[in-house]
Image 1: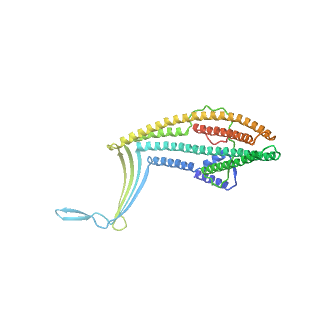
Image 2 (image 1 turned 30 degrees about the vertical axis):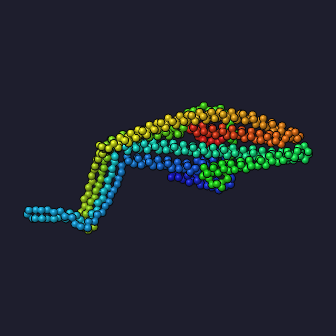
Image 3 (image 1 turned 90 degrees about the horizontal axis):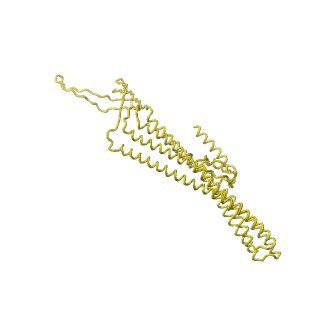
Length: 435
């Protein structure tokens, strides 16, 4: 009940917030919204609840049960018992009444049920595995959201760079117009400057379209309405910190889940072996049987009784043996999956570290390229003011500067995305602010 109230309050707060105007949202804020709103995470939460109910169902097999049965029977004909006596001849006695009421109250308790005991233990382990699977689902969704968010920041910053380049193209067009009027450049160079400005316009439109597409995906993933104005904020420029050498996979949720599945498969084998064990139950019951031709029911019997029952298989036609063998094969498959997953994760982690080192090298290289591009652009603008450079050279200097900024931004994006992949593989929390 407390969890339900907490969910309702959280949902109400979110709905109230969604009715407002556009708001800046950091990566950390978005991931918290995603954790509360994602339909995939909600479905996974329901699976956890379902596994919890399975534990309760399995436990009920070990607890005492109390049941009752009531019945009423109306006899529409008479039933007789015949006696053939040598002295009195044939005699018949009626053995039934018109109305019969029967009531049973039975309490049962399993004294020894190895199968139910193992199933209960397996259900608890399976519930723990479901919780780990849920946490893994949360991490997968958060990783997807983090990728989209960082990509939206990349396109957002790219759009700023492209718009700056467009403004430079417009300034160059105006300057070329002034130089043409002063007789310092030809009409061809003027037409080229105008064309280069027009060529820059579609790039802005494409960047805006890509940005809006990413925003729509972010809203869909977090179950936000499409008319909600989301403005991602943050910095994808990552610091050039030393690369971590942590390669421990102990906190990896996928591996933990498979290890839990291995424990479940071991218990499944024990449960199948327990099929050969006897099952002992004790019962305590009370029976009331009342009969009468009218509805007074004065003729009644009341009986208290106790019962001990023992049940065990003798011949099952090979069913138990086949199920036991199947459980062993299932355990072998889980062990193979564990080995494969561990190898795969180790390989992914090694590759991620290589990608991160490559991204760091690209960042350092692009920083040098950007410094050179800025200097070349300053020189080209100085020469253009004196009519000593062609429109083509000016365009190239502008594009080189814009591309250098974009390449540096992309290198930072790749570094940030790779760090997310490393954290996900190591089982670290993804909800934290990018600084």
